[in-house]
Amino acid sequence: MSLPIEQYALISDCHTGALVGSDGSVDWLCLPRYDSSSAFGALLGDEDHGRWLLAPDDPTATSTRVYVDRTFLLVTRWVTSTGEVEVTDFMPHGDGRSDLVRRVRGVRGSVAMRQDLRIRFGYADAMPWVRQMEERGGNALLAVAGPDALVLRGPKLAASGHSHSGQFIVDAGETVDLVLSWFPSHLPDPGTLNVTFEMSRTARWWQDWARSYGHRGPYFEPVIRSLLVLRALTHEETGGIVAAVTTSLPEEFGGTRNWDYRYVWLRDAALSLSAFLGHSYVSEAQNWRNWLLRAIAGDPHDVQIMYGLAGERYLPERELTSLPGYQGAAPVRVGNAAVGQYQSDVIGEVMIALHEAREAGIKEDAFSWPLQRALMTLVEENWQRPDQGIWEVRGPERKFTHSRVMMWAAVDRAIRGVREFGLPGPVEEWERLRDTLREEIETHGFDEKRGTYTQYYGTDTVDASLLQLPQVGYCEADDPRMLGTVAAIEKDLMRGGLVCRYLTDPEMDGLPPGENPFLACSFWLVEQYARSGRLPEARDLMDRLVALCNDVGLLSEEYDVVAGRQAGNMPQALSHLALVQAADWIAKAEGEPGKADTRV
Image (cartoon, rainbow, N blue to C red; front, side, top):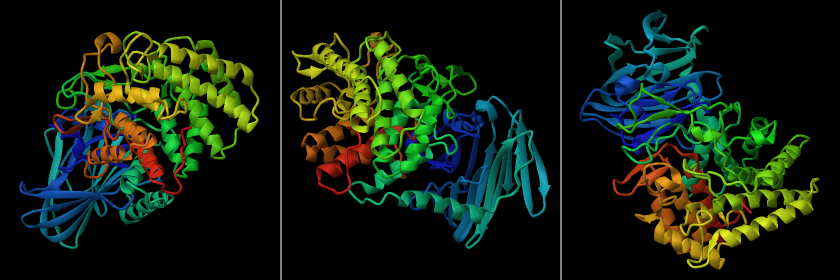
């Protein structure tokens, strides 16, 4: 059975990533991209769905693990009855290959290590043909199925049924390298790897990237780790930022709210751009803007809310029968039906992000501003249309207040592009539309009786997405209407001290009721507290949230406050970027230098 979600650590080469369990098993790896099919899928089943275990052959062994400073090189130190070893797991960056390296170094005494390798291509639907290869200076195991091939170089393994296993001894001062390399099966084996060189080069690359973030304000370590996660989730070649590494990790254990997050949501990616810009990572923002312009190029009416890593549009949702689900939570889904939804808030997030890019000095070109004007045409023609909202409800379309505010923000940023940067556009028409949207929101999206903004027009319920209203400049955080909304969120949506997205209702979202608090929403409340002068409460909630990070600083999507465990896909970009924004606002509230509001 797979481990608790928080017991996994990420290693990445900025093309894909592996999840390594605290037991030494690689239980999730899709090759060669995040959205490729899995070669190791035990995370969504058991060992027979694919894994690579490397651990001491000693049931009494204990382990601790850390990342090498400011990198995604994972070091696990095992202590056994006979000695100690360190296992360094990493994926080389920038070598043009797809490799996973596991270096074992003897620290003390003598330790017997064991391997269990079970390769299952195609989401555990393709059992490979495996054969031994004799090589000068070592052993190699070649596995092939259809378009995929893997070669493992290291200590020799023996077949046992549909797995390969073996044992080797590591003495103090000795180093043993294991290298797993993926390649298209119709091409030659990529050959051996210089592990020492690649380890040094990869560590240096991550550390050089992290060094650009020089601020040492509050929550420095969680912030820099979160920025590193966002960089790891940014595809090196395309610039697309995936929402998470995984698919179908349940939002509610044993439930059906299991979604595929290995794609690029315009909303999440736009917020990631804000986090990068707020910390001087302008080149990452430039790459994302270029990705965006390519992905949404064409008829603005064809804009989707999500795309593949290279801008692919066809992402149909289907259910797999080859994987039983995380600890039995079915179904396992690949693709996402939300790709066909209309979510009007997305245009607002995109326009905000592109305006921030302008403010950061990224110049508009002959393509970028005309494309934004085309997006404004889409808003002008659809601003009265209901949608399915930020949470991608599978119930009926409604006029969600958050979505209406985000359309207001889209128009506002277009106006500011004209007024502040001299760009061409029908600014008077846009200003009239902005005023119309505000009047409508204040009339239909605010409940005078409760004194709160509402989830959607015609209801008196609230939604955690309303915490974004001050973030996008719609109102001040200490506006009485916003304070009333916050009070209602605290009353209606808090569970175990954390914030749920909304009150689940099958008639509203089309799904069975019940889910866990959403970590990004809880960080949004931290930001709201910091913005509105409630700094002690902001600090208290922030401390509790940061304590939910696992031992290597990673967060999933949600948190089960009853069971005390992470839930949902992980690591989750939205959770980490919300952490960054919350920490920035605490720093600003405390008067730390160099912190600016990048959202308004």
